Amino acid sequence: MRVAVLASGEGSNLQAILDNVHERHNVEVVLVVSDKPDARALDRAAAAGIATATFPLADFPDREARDRAIGERIRAANVGLIVLAGYMAILSSAFVQRFDGMLINVHPSLLPKYPGLRAIEQALEAGDDQTGVTVHYVDEGVDTGEPIAQELLGIGPGESLEQLTERIHAVEHRLLPEVIAQLAFARSNG
Ligand code: GRF
Image 1 (tube, rainbow, N blue to C red):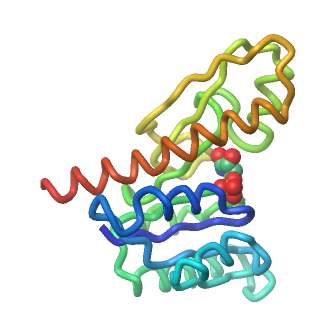
Image 2: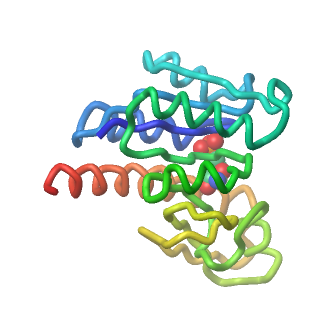
């Protein structure tokens, strides 16, 4: 299964994919796309010998035109799965419809709780005693698509944002590659 990854920042989830499923489990990451030319994710991709492409909004008349260009690049790469791994731009409806069923995202909460930004902060601010990680299909809403996998984490009394963030990231780095491997397995077995 050929895979494209979209990332805007640090790229630690991309790294987890490269370290755990890339070039095994019938998975090959063939393209990493970013909206931010300075994203560390691009360096991680380049270090692994993977093609990269950047699409800053400023280079296009609007978001739809940018997403059309990203779509063309992804089509040319002939991928079967597109993974949003810390991709912080909202994708246009046309893009989501074009790649319906091929787009997945990782989100640091137990969706449908806390979609959008600051999900980890919101769970702490609400005094919740649990949160988690969701991997889900992407639809036209913000973090509203059908969940594929969820993992719950208890929040310790007095746990800091830094501590919880670190534990959530550790779960993301395991869960997202697992889901990708499962999707590749399911496809290879019809
Ligand atoms: C992750 O917490 C992910 O859940 C969220 O953005 C963060 C990206 O981190 N969507 P990284 O760029 O993969 O390190």
